Image (tube, rainbow, N blue to C red; front, side, top):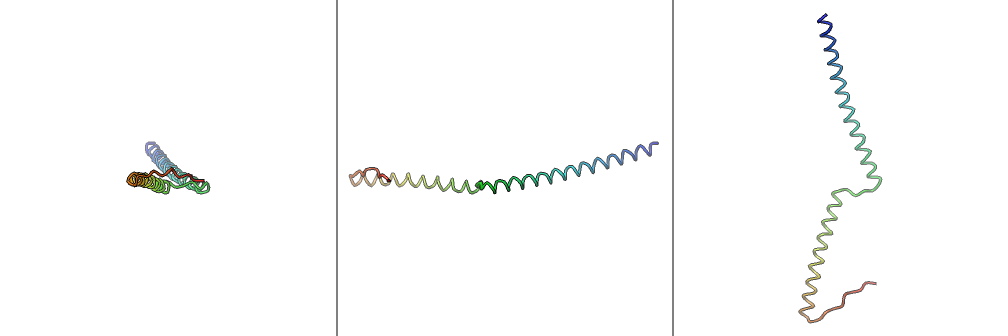
Length: 91
């Protein structure tokens, strides 16, 4: 009887191990599937990628800093020339 009981538990343990492996494989397959579906939806929505956003943000920051630097330079040149030009109006 102990031989049968031991064999039963061995088979049960093997079955549980196989089931756990199958569940792990299913989980990985499901993650890959949902990730690919999410990426497809984002591509279809034409959402900007994080790297592109950060690059444009850095360019905008640099352009604003350059604009401020040039504005100060124009003010200094106008002060040196003794003239003050009215603010430009764009139509």
